[in-house]
Length: 84
Image 1 (cartoon, rainbow, N blue to C red):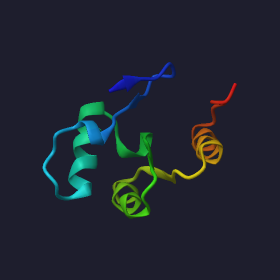
Image 2 (cartoon, helix red, strand yellow):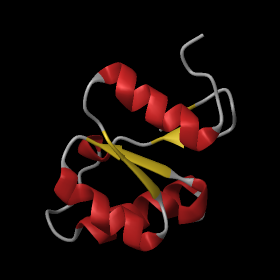
Image 3 (cartoon, rainbow, N blue to C red):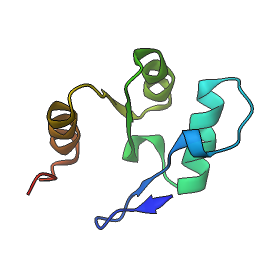
Image 4 (cartoon, rainbow, N blue to C red):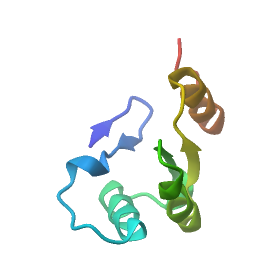
């Protein structure tokens, strides 16, 4: 986990050694590790099939595409300026 200056975290699921299975299970594990409700999270992924399970748990989702567009989407959701 990498802590951000604004009090949240980033957890890279690819770094976790979890068995292949339900994406929803991975996301529930992530929420437990971060000790956050899904409604306090933004899930960013470049694969569209990973977004619906996160959204079903209550997370806001962003499909990563071009870096600037992805950052703009995230900062709009969080009401932050990440590019300054």
